[in-house]
Every structure is written in structure tokens, then in C-alpha cells.
Length: 205
Image 1: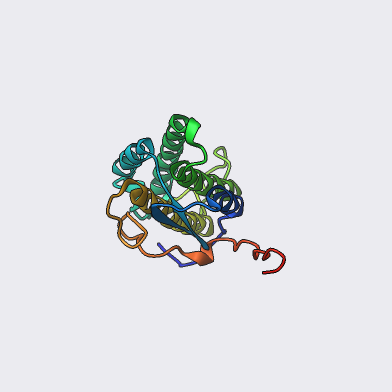
Image 2: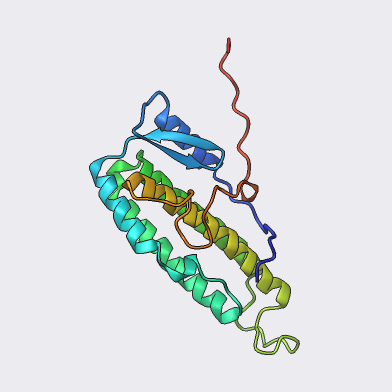
């Protein structure tokens, strides 16, 4: 059910700017790759432990690798994404004293992706009280709306897979080409992201 369309673009510009501020002038042990930027970081031991737990808990979640074919699949995917969002919040609470660290940054990137998908999903949502559409048989969403869900979930999976891949880097675990979930490996899909403003070089540069 993939069309290859990109129905919306993730905006991580504030997060990328924050990452640049946090690591300015630092020399890190590992390099994280985010859309349009790479940063050097040095995770603390607690971040390493939590990063491993996050990867192990999320990498096999079906919603991160399955493809939808009907409205029931979409509904299950949305419910699972809400569970993942709550898991992210719980881990961010555990990292409340390490908000300037790389793991919190990557969790924020995941949360931002889910939040922006949910905003897109609000535009697609049909009133629950609406009667079944006579043209769509067992489907309660029109075909174009259903395709919007398929395409939105597709780019969200790629985003989350690559975020988890970078969390695996923090944990010192093997990651496959920046992504860790089946079917969503490889470099960041840059066309699915808003490009950050060009950096202005300091005077005299």
C-alpha cells in the first residue's frame, strides 16, 4: 500500500539547533547522524544502559515494520504509536537530569516525529459518529484518506527506525546502515524533512 508520496515533512530544526548548541566545542567519543547534521557526543554510563533497554524494547515492535492494508490495521498502528509515545515520555522522565545528553535528544526526535504525524493525522480523521460510507464497503475511511495514513505511517516508520538506529550507536550496539527496523534501514530520507536554515558564518570567516 505504499505510494512513495511524502504527505508531510518533519520539522526538526529546533532540535537540530539545540544539538548544535549542546555540542559546540566538545570532542565526543562517538558520532551521531541526524538529518542534515552530524554531532560528536560522549554518553554517560546511565545513558548507555538506558539506550540498550530502549533498543531492545522497541526494535521488534510490529508497528515499526508492518505494512497496513485496511482500516483495522491503521487503528492498531495508531494505538501502538500511542504506547510508544508513552514509553518515550517515561524514559525522558528517567533522564530528567540529563536533558542535555544525546539520548534525551534522540528520544525528543522520536517524540517530535510522532507528534507531527499525529498533527497530520488530525487532518485525516473522520468523525466517529459519521455513518459508514456506502461506496467503501468494509472500509470506514475513503480510499484517498486511507492512502494518506499509509504514506504518513511509512515516513514515520523510517524516521523512528533511524532514531532507534542512532540510539543503538549510543548504546554501542550494532546498527544496520542507520536504521534498525526491517524494511527501514539506510540513510535518512532527507526529502521527508524540512531543511534547516543555512548557517551564517561568523564575521571574518
